[in-house]
Length: 161
Image 1 (cartoon, one colour):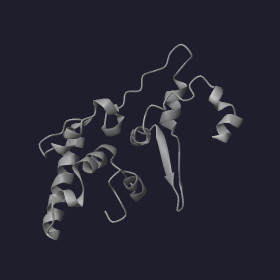
Image 2 (cartoon, rainbow, N blue to C red):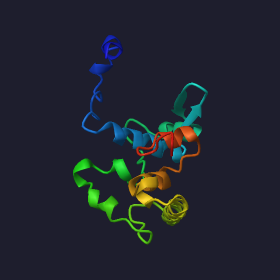
Image 3 (cartoon, rainbow, N blue to C red):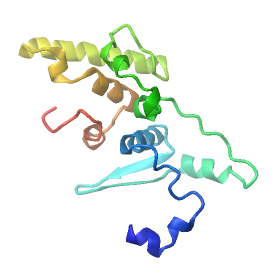
């Protein structure tokens, strides 16, 4: 972009290092950093902003030129490298499986969401996948969106859902 070239950000040594990752990977990373408290999201009527939280500032302040503390994030959905991802992982998920979840609570939430989807599907007389796909439910369980705006950012969620 012209702004990047004008500010000479393209000359920085780290510029472009993340270009091999898809946009969904970066979105998933952002959602993880928000859900873990390193970033904060403020949603207004027309827009939302994301900034570094106090926890994120503490983490950044703890790094030195000779030492960068590790930031360990649960490996979820789009954070997995594309070539290592298997579409079969999502097709074969059942209520008893909770692989790929960072905590037992995530697995329980996933199972609860599957049960609610089944109840809803029965009440309207349709197949559960027509309500919401397994992959979308997994993303909801992992990111735990706390607002409608965050929920809308998950792939597979639209205005109707």
